[in-house]
Amino acid sequence: MKATARANANIALVKYWGKRDDELILPMNGSISVTLSGLNTVTTVEFNEKLRNDVFVLNGVEQKGDERKKLGNHLDLVREKAKIKWNARVESKNNFPTAAGLASSASGFAALSVAAAKAAHLELNEKELSILARMGSGSASRSIHGGFVEWQKGTKKDGSDSYAEQIAKPGHWENFRILTTIVSGKEKKVKSRAGMKQTVQTSPMYKGWLETVENDLENVRAGILKKNFSLVGETAEMNALKMHSTMLTTRPAIIYWEPETIEIMHAVQELREEGTECYFTIDAGPQVKVLCLQKNEAIVTARLGEITGLQKIVPCKVGGKAETISEHFF
Image (cartoon, rainbow, N blue to C red; front, side, top):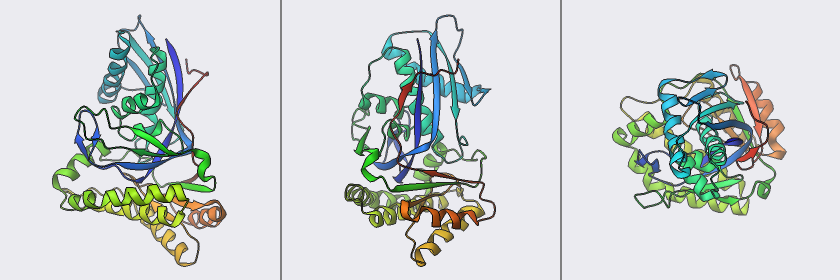
């Protein structure tokens, strides 16, 4: 009862921020993302009757406490569906910094869900896998799919109508590029889950966020289908700034940005003023993702490379769906 899966991270073009149900991870608003090639998690899961407890190894380090408990709770969902009681050994590796604002939980729980379901001999379709992944991390619901993806917020209390669906396949927009900049590999002090809760409870800007997000979803969805880069980029950049404005106005304020974060934002605005179209978006962390078309990738990369303190630029194309692979970690 062993399987291995690989899942890509995703970057939200219209963000998910805030939950209507913390336990089931049901969002206050819908979101749209693009799946990224090049940033992924690979996870092997084996259910074994000889194991006394679940074992979780992440990037070569055995996890204890809250991290192992979170994983165990997710495996319980699979065990319940499969009607098995065996503990599991899970080994997982990210090829990018963990818990640093690069959607490691999205790729992580997507890979875990696909591998665990396969290892438990469950035949789940993509909708069911998306719901399962969502129960571990909201954004993981989107990493089940490749291409451009929309996570429906749903209205039902049991979460059965809250899952992600593909808007467009990876090959739909072949010259769409995402330049992922890494300015810090450190774990962020405020995890997304805690940040969302604090924002919903204390930010006076949150009402405005909810009132405008449906229009953002409509614009980005239309922009993707029509391959209107200006519409997608402008909307995504403003949506990210609105989300961070709700964090900045919580009590106490949540400030994820580093000096390099702001420098990159300025560089993107300057490039646009000079005639090179590109836009930025930022999740809950200091890393900036710069959107551009293939024809401008070299110009944008060169400008970003001039920024002192920028550790790495990872160029990404539109990535594929989560899938099982044959090579296991153990």
